[in-house]
Amino acid sequence: IMRLQQDLFIMSTHTVFRNLEEERIWVIDQTIRDKFSPKQMYQVALKSDIPWRQWQQWIREKVTTYCRENNLVNMNYQTQSIGSMSNVLPNNNNNNMHNPSVSMANVFQPMPQQQQQQQPAPFVSN
Image 1 (tube, rainbow, N blue to C red):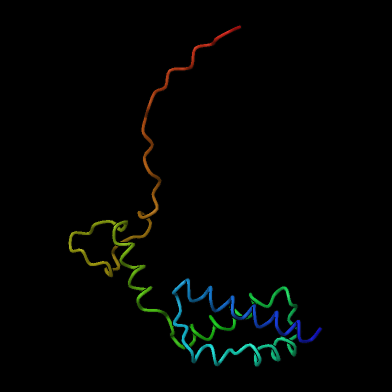
Image 2: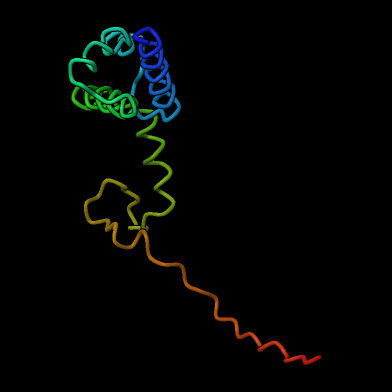
């Protein structure tokens, strides 16, 4: 049973890393994978008494906390996110996205609904 449980932990670790790589928010390279190797982390999880159903969440939290503390943000993702916001930011004439006078309050305004007057459907009786 211990071998089966360890295999499940290894698969959970692989799943977490695959998801983090697909999200492209963090720099996940071989050094990160080595630092959080499943065999080492399995022992930590057992000592910390982490329930098996929470392993993926626990592993993800450990990896992302480390990445956050060591500034391992994927700069390509950050640039892409900022660029995608440029089309919804209000135009402030000098086109400086980093100008603190740009208010995010106007970004998520509700879309104006088209005022269409619909005629009620005629009542048909059988």
